[in-house]
Every structure is written in C-alpha cells, then in structure tokens.
Length: 341
Length: 271
Image 1 (tube, rainbow over the protein chains, first blue to last red):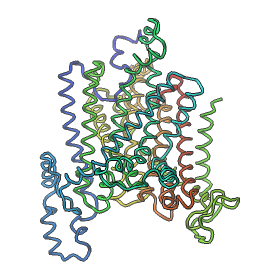
Image 2 (image 1 turned 90 degrees about the horizontal axis):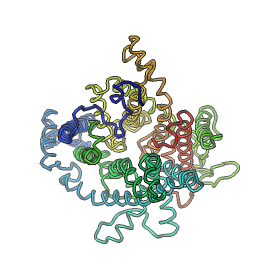
Image 3 (image 1 turned 120 degrees about the vertical axis):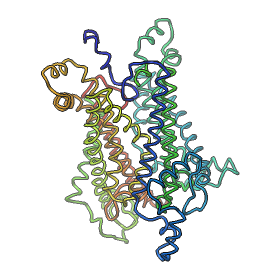
Image 4 (image 1 turned 60 degrees about the vertical axis):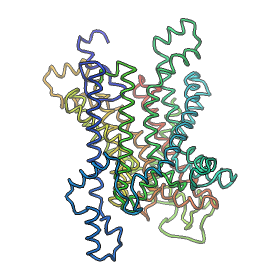
C-alpha cells in the first residue's frame, strides 16, 4: 500500500462491519453518543414504518370483528371505542406512548392485553430459538475448526460439501422429512403441538424436531463463516510468530486464531438469533407450535392489527438493540472499529 | 477443470432449461385432473409419479420452476436496480450525509425480520407472485447497496480514478464509467447468491399460501399439499424438495465458482 500518497488511509479497504461515515475523533465517548443517537433515530423510524405499513393494510378491524351482517350503529360504536376514527397522528402517538409504558394495547380477536399474548408465545419461541442456536453452534464449532485445520484434505471437502447442502435445504421441507422419520416411522418424538411447560420433558420433546430443523441450515452457514474466518486469521503474522515460538498448528489455532475469528462468528450468531426468533414462523406452522411467528401469522390473517404492530415492533426493537450492544462491545474490545463511526 | 463450478452451472442450467421448456411443452397437461391415476409411485410413464389429483409431478416441477426462477430473478433485478446506484452514490460521497443516510437506511431494512415483513406485505396486499417479488426484492436492496459500496470504495483508491478526476470527470460519471465495470464481478456473484436465497424465500411464501396462486404450479405449494400425504406417498413430498435443493445448491456452487474464477483474491471467502 506504500507510495499511494499520504491520503490513502482515508480510502482504506472497506470496513468489516459496514457502518457508514467516518469520524475523525476517536474515543469511546463520542462513539457512544453517536450510536445512542442513531439507536433512538432507528427506533423512531422503525415505529413509523411499521405503523404506516399497518395503516395501508386494507380491511377495517371493527367490521372484521363484527362480521358482514353488523348493524351500522354497532359498527360505529365499536370504531369509536377502538379509537379508529381519531386522526392518524393521534393514533400513532397513542400507540408509541403505550409502547413506552409497556402497554401494547388490547388484542381485537383474543380480547386480552397484547403483552400477555406476547409473553405466552415467547415461552415457546424463546426456548426454541435458544435451543436451535445452541444446537447450531454445537455442530458448527467442531465442523468449522476441523475444516480450517484440515484445509485441502478430503475430510474438509466432504464437510464443506455437506455445509453447501445444508444451506440449500429449505428448513420446512427438512422438517417434513424429520417428522416422517422420527415421528411417523420410529415414533420417537411428537409430530407437532405443544402442551406447555408443566411437563418439561414433554415440552422439550415437542421442541426437539423443530429445533433440529431450524438449526441445521444455520449450522451450515455458521460453519462456513467460522472456517473462512479461521483461515484468514491463520494467515496473519502473529500466528506465524506463535508457530515460530514453537506452538503446534492446533495450539495456534485454538489459542490465537479462534479468539480472533470469533468476531464475525458472533455477528452472525447475533443475526441468527433474531432470525430464529421471528423466522421460525414457517417451522411453527409445520409443527403447530403456539409461538410468536404463528401468532403474527394468525393475527395478520385475522386483521388483528394491534397484535401485528406490537409484535413486529418488539422483534425489530430486539434486532436493533442486539446490533447496538454488539457494536458497542466490539468497539470496547477493538479500538480499530471505533474509528469507523 | 473446476468441478464444483461445472456442477453448479449444470444444475442451474437444468433448472433454467426446465423452466424454459415448460413454456412451450410439458410431458403431461397439469390443468387436467386424472383421479384414477392419483398418487402413483415413479414409473416409466410418470418419472416422478403423480400427485393427489393424478397430475404428473415432473410436469408440475417444470411448471413450478418457471414461477420460482421468475420470482427470484425479478427480485434480484429490483435489489440490484435500486441497491447498486445507492451503494455507488454512498461510496462516491463517502462520509457525507448521503453516505450516512444510505447506510442507516440499510441498517433499518436489515433490522426488519424479512420473512415476517414479507408475509405482512403479501397478506396485506393479497397473495400473488407479484407481491412475493416485491416482498423479496425489498430485502435485496440493502444487500446490493452494501456490496456495491464496499466494492466501490476500494476502486476509488486506485490511481486511474484519480486520473479520471484530474481529467475533470464528475463523481457520477466516474461511478458509471469506471467503478461499475470494475465491481461487476462482485455484483454477479452476489446476484447468484440472492437468486438462490430468493428461490428459498419464494418456496417458503408459497408453502404458507402467500405465493403464486392456483392453478399456477409452485414448488412451495406442492410441498404444502404433500404434507398430509407424506406417510402415504413420500415421493410427492420428496420431488419438490429435491428440486429446490438442487436448484439452490447449483446456484450457490455457481456463485462460489464464479467468485473464485473472476477474482482469485477472494478465493475461499464466505459472502
């Protein structure tokens, strides 16, 4: 890179984490303030986008609740009660104010507070996402390490071939095959449904197949990222130094390379967690699980818009907050990332 | 030479050929039900067997390839068509408010759970292939914007760009005339990846009934219909799944192979 003039740092290679803008003032304080400001801006814009999206959805929730034969005055009374006749901005402000106080409104169809619904559904979705993530990491970590250590050998080619296959697998199809084998043929695990956590063993059994179906494609992605991050780190000078010091390849890999390769892996893990929380929507449909995704899916079809609005907002908030915390953590660990603004 | 690239190209070509052929010819008419022939296992007459209504599954797969590929391809077109100019603009004005705005906009779209939002869009505006394209296409925009920005930033550092600036060319003109051709290979590789992701997304949407509507054949809906029959006639569920896996695998191998062939520096890197 020498000889490109004094200016070349400004145009240095693109950032690992694609954050825009370059701050010339380093330092955690300024970085923190800037990130906090964008955090709130993102949340505000996200709430506006979600509200607007719901606003343009055709279909009046009040007439949907009462059916097509409803008397006009009953309909008008209900619209009044639900606050549907108020101006758009008032309804938006009321919704946001409610969100901030933890009041997500009342479900149109279930007639219970949305908070209650979300809490009940999270009891399924959260354990499912965590289970799938743990499973995916448990598969991906040894596979990624092995593939990086045995680069170019037949075992690496075979493992990465399987990873390619795993990525190409639609998880709901894989889920159907799992049901066919483990529930129908061998009768080891239930084919669907969820009876609650009163019997923890039965609950875990109900979540086992969905978790495997979700985990395998994620594990394939994770293993590929880990492998390529490890290979890139193994080419660095400090690894050569460690080897020169007398460490074996395996020691250099586990003591030095793994820790440095974990940053991209953790980023992917963070993204996968939020994907699993919301993205289980189709898997929850395959297994008839009463999770968050199925709640949103049913609420959309029933025009229970307040539930959709609040549930999507919770998910988006979760993603934005996870990104925020990850960014701050990285910046605290690695000062190079702070400059990227 | 490059066996995986060839395998990827062959599988992708197979899917494209099946889709193209289905426009003019199918082994059997899939609009006609033949209940007497229903749920037959694979045979010389029906290579992939028949479904619940006696329709030839191979013909359904070929017709379904049309929808899957068309939806994913147009969604890539939307993503690249809007995302690449945004990414180029962000790189050309690095560090300015334009760059910041585009970057934050990308972050925002990424924060939305794509599948839930796609379901929201298709459920709200009516299930159809067009709405599936829009729902998938929106989430392709930030991907292309990021790839284009990152690629463009590294080109902007090169001497020939300085020469072009000295010659008096503006940022927009440099972006189009010099940056774009140099990041084309990056974009093509990303395009094949988004293409394969689009096929998976379309399958998921039509599986829950929000993709192309009957009588149009689609791989996802074939799987949904097969779900209750999987015990009686596993071949009904196997065939569409295998078609999806083969197409997505083919496109991914093609993308990886192209990346290695076009830019050896990126070899082995995961995008």
